[in-house]
Image (cartoon, rainbow, N blue to C red):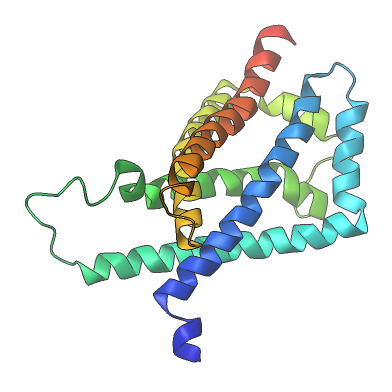
Length: 214
């Protein structure tokens, strides 16, 4: 039983489920962030307050944190396991064996993790009281951060890399769950392409609009 639970196949399966759960949260997060484009800070601050205090949301938050930890730890483990299983690099790589998206998943995922840590320090840790700041006025904090050109550039780069990560991640997750066949593969590819463009562009537009028009 332990061998089954901790096999590479089971890790990929659990990692896929955790990743899909995280992907369900991103549109919700984007919907709330789009409220930053309103001149009135109250809707965004009310939404942020609701997400921080509503009991059911707090349960989902715990599940999200677990999903993040599982997805990251299993992703690192599987990548290291893959590297160790092929310690000698071939002089000529067969490009048909794996896509560029697949080869660089660990690096695009790492960049997203770095941004996630920065995001936690700027917002989530303030909510927890670990970092100084006003948890009732994240609207003003977001505007302060988006007034910093280096932060905006980092924000854009990370969401660009997130798009690359999402494109392969969605396809890989559904393949792991057994939805790789003649009918579902093109459907999943189309969904992956749309999702990996719309979500990052949606997030990236927010600081651009604030920078140009606010």
